[in-house]
Length: 424
Image 1 (cartoon, rainbow, N blue to C red):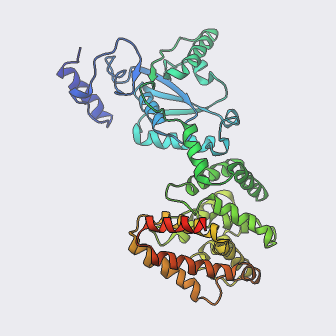
Image 2: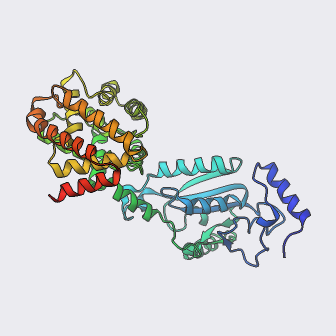
Image 3: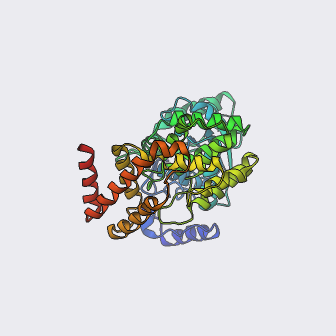
């Protein structure tokens, strides 16, 4: 039966002391007859006992990659269990090498940091101890002062292994509340999130990650810093609003180095990797912000001559530079303008999608202004080789896009014009 009003008020006072939201009468369910938790109401277990937090210490484990909604439900419920300490077994990187889309799996350090940030806002007063999970039992089989382990219906077999291990170690058995996810029609999964990221990247992520590892190895950057910044790079370049300024753009620029016989220079490569890392279509300081983020990376990674890279990144704003290496990097950035018509129109459509927040009239005006600025310049490209390869075709492509934009009244019509162009 429902708890009475006095009891509810007492619970609310307890939550006030902990700076937690109050519970209302409607939010409190019937006291369940089993320790199973339901996602509909995360307070079922908490109200079973005479105290808000029924155990001294509790534990939970998982990969917690990309920290999605399902993870947050699990961690929120885990936060309701202990009065003192929550142990979290975080699966070690070494156990994730066979995961699907492993190149998109966040590093241990990144996953740990995300968990700590989550608890900082969720329940900052609780002591959270995170340990690497190196097998299916982990800390839950050895921690002496542990009272409970939160599991899901999927990890129930692992829970049984934990109990067996504790029995072998002559430790107390654990209470094991079970979180049921079976009522969610479409389960949230890290694998699904990673698949979305892989698709968004538009490129072979395993190859890209390999290139990043080789680059940071040449610069003698630590493994932890390398992994954490790969996570940041991947997150930035797969943002929802990106359609052209993705990792494929970085991939294409790196590939072009062979055509232009660019001397091996890790700093030049870093400028390519970071030049579009911050990209918000509505903002006018993306280049400055990208340079600043690179500066943070350079500081953490111990990269010398970081100012050289920052200068190259900032030069992409006006696409002008005095140094030959800067001019070459800028030509690699604009190479798409001189591609075959089919590739160019795909690029143009991607840019329009990135600026889809703007009405057609505003976009047409701004885009035509940018394109005309290219046409008015003495040369679009800055190095003799790029001028020879791309200049004439780039000017033809730009004139074609201006004609398309001017003849289309809206974005849908613009897209249809592009599709028609591709079929001719």
